[in-house]
Image 1: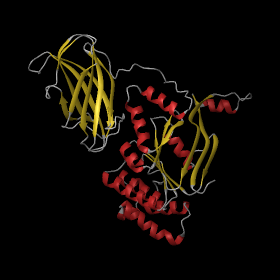
Image 2: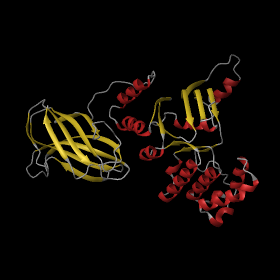
Image 3: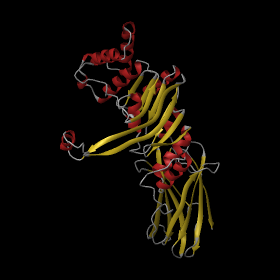
Image 4: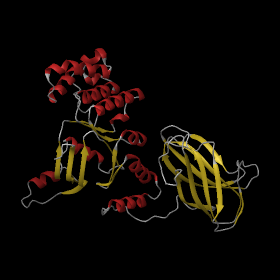
Length: 414
């Protein structure tokens, strides 16, 4: 194997036996005809993957895609049903920050146990132990049983132990979602130090902006297969589309076409193009966000301009119709509102079956996070705009952006 390749997976598959009842295991064991009492569940299938030394590989995928199984196989925690795994170096896996801690032992005893397990030379142990204690900020509690620690103390100790031995491969599975911002910042400073020393990192997180910033390469795992292997921003774009799109199956179909792989995904069915449900007034189609180059995206960067666009077709004659955009954060909290009424851009008269194309260009001016833009098409039936309005709503979701006050609204009849 090439010395620059630290991890190599060839045709890796993992199947689990699923028994309906516990006694079926016993019945199968004593069956004279070797009758099977289980159903096979495929967690990952025919995975080929090479990871180079010093790379930071991000793994994207929807729930159930097989991310954790893949990490466990790389870490050696799970044995694949088929295929081969080759790892040239020492691996530390943070699949769970406190997974390597024995609650009955003290913090110091846990440190000693892990240093013994990793075959750390005696002359280095005192220094490494001191580094772990300083990082964990446990102080005099180092001599107390871990079961008496708070969750934060356990997390700091677990991370300190995992990184202090300076592994050649570090596997991180969403464990940095715990703890406060100060702890997370300390963790990433530590990981960056390891990267400078040549450590390879395999990283899974639902924090997409963090993955894009931190990783040098990314893969998209879906339906037990790798559908995309590319630079992080591009993979994140497709992940966001699959996660938030109203036509998720269409996005997955596109990925299968790009990868050249055959899908046995049962959910691949054609759905209607509309982003929402049709109501008495209208229905919206082709709802999307494009960057300044005209490329569709679901990942927005602060300080750049983007255009949200859609087509709206009316089911009946309407008078005085306004378009409204409402931005909210992930909790549903209102952030800002912009509508065509305030910009004196109202559609005065509309006939049944007419279609209008709407574009709203805005500057992203919020920090990293998940946000949504709610699009409303509203017929004004009261001059005071206080009541008696009908509304159609469609929602498009994205990462790290929102509508600002600098909007350029364009409405054109098609």
